[in-house]
Image (cartoon, rainbow, N blue to C red; front, side):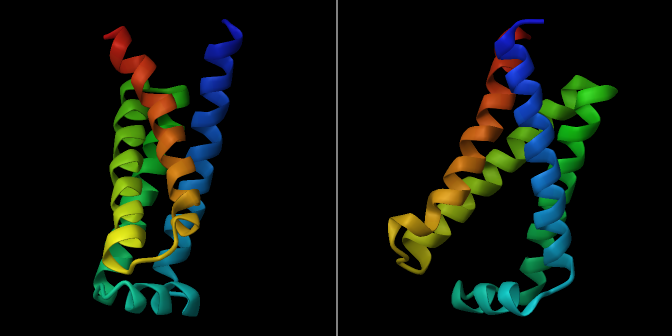
Length: 122
């Protein structure tokens, strides 16, 4: 296994764990997240949906490491699309400074790093 392949697997595992944590916390409806979704002018049920999508994407990434690599592709795509939504929310919906989108942009790139090489190999 090459160094690049190893790095992609490490990114996949880390992104999967981060998304499990991030999505799981949204299910708890912490004050931070409920306040943030109010600022975004999204209904609170969307907080749970977003958390669910992040958990499913994270699980896909982690399961894809061991059992079914195609699940890693789907998980990475799901996270990438979700992060595009997060970036647009910060930049367009609430007019946050661009720096507010940096975490979502990093996760978007990580999702693409995991997904694109596998899609090209199909």
